[in-house]
Length: 69
Image (cartoon, rainbow, N blue to C red; front, side, top):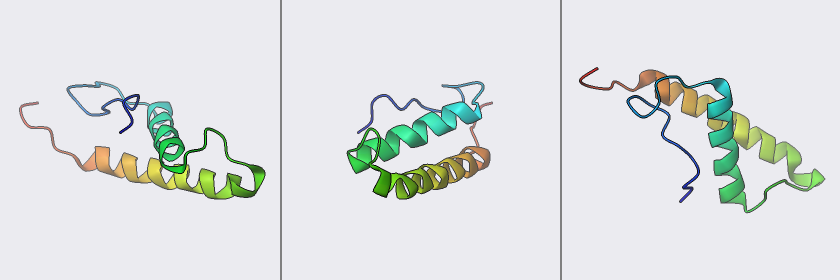
């Protein structure tokens, strides 16, 4: 789907920053919505989606258990 979203868990990424998570969420919302930058009337919904995906991604990464590490 989004080839430019990189894997954000070990062993693929040792350190994941908030910027990495934000960039992945933004890329996902851009792909799903079809907008690189939303029109003013869609900006709030666009940003809300990015924020929600960031939070969900952070929770996911925090809860994953990587075996053999």
